[in-house]
Length: 511
Image 1 (cartoon, rainbow, N blue to C red):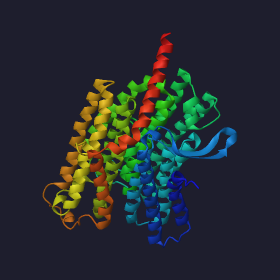
Image 2 (image 1 turned 90 degrees about the vertical axis):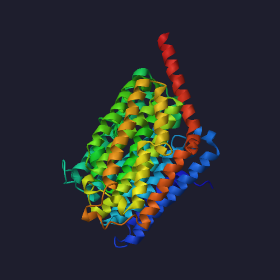
Image 3 (image 1 turned 180 degrees about the horizontal axis):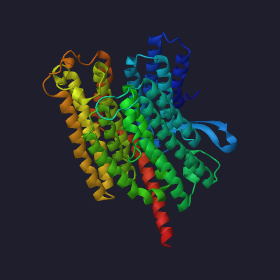
Image 4 (image 1 turned 60 degrees about the horizontal axis):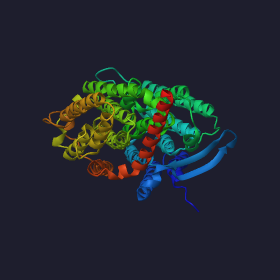
């Protein structure tokens, strides 16, 4: 019997959610244990799949561990999952971040039963997005990942009434849902258009990639549907406004999931669908994507400098860093695409860790205002140290994972357009400005505020969550080879096929 490892990874959180749904809400400890245990099991299995992939990296040029079950054969729909070099790192990232988020969720003190059910369903959706080969099930998993976020932000989120414009969780949740549903709707329209345009009568991505041939006009239209759908999910300017408000109201574990893995669904969509399915349209619209990416990097970095809310600052930072991802993807060369994948992995770890750091002091002080803090290094030295490491990784300091991704994406873009690379490099300077400004105001200085003098350093549970993230950020910064080994064969095949398709189209147009 062949064990369906991918299906176990995907559906274990849902199984735990179903068990929790039938438990009395007073059994809080068991509910927490089931949720964290399911997250840990999926994370361990994701790591196992990643390590097995490293044992035969050439095999990752195609889908492995494929599991296919017929569903609606009359219209070509089947439950089909698998991993290749483009998705295996995203599966690992989902496992790591979701486990940290679930363990951090133990501090949630109201309606724990409902919270964990919704959170686990969302995690199943994210796993399914990265593993799905069937386009119909891709959109099903996309919705499963998105819809619970509305309830999680609207019920367990917080209002921001301090300085600046008030942000209410109901409004933030509604805006988040509307944007994500708009994105999902556009992707669904793109999938249906692709289904009828190809005439292949299948939603199987593997089959479509091998057999589908679209005209230039069809490519343009369908590309735009996919592009704007995924651009919303990735938080690409100007479709990003749902993200800062959502983060400002979301509880800390949810912010970790939003920034750590949900944003990556948009970037993954570009790599999985936009580039290989519509190569000519991707080349045509690449200058537009470069322009939007540079605007995202520079503009949101400047906006981050003006923030007084720590979570909003990190949220705008996430938008800026996703600009590097989209820029690298549409460079459509080996360095750019590999750099984009690595940047998604790195940013998922670093942004999730930064939100965790904010959550640590928010749980103690119940405010995210930067002005409420200062001098924490005096009584929270361990916290100050880990916060510094993640801040430096966010800036892109050599020796951290953040440097590798940013360097490779800019290298890839430099080969295509030096001006785009130049303006993107200014974003690195700006990120140093807002990140170090935040760190200085929160951590350094004299401990003068009475409310801060009795704060305790990291608890054992917080150490158990944050220290492994520190190790991973430094490990991948010093030794990024495992990620590159896992992605190289798939990226090479992708770039080769896309380049050949563009070349053939240009030759045909010339003749």
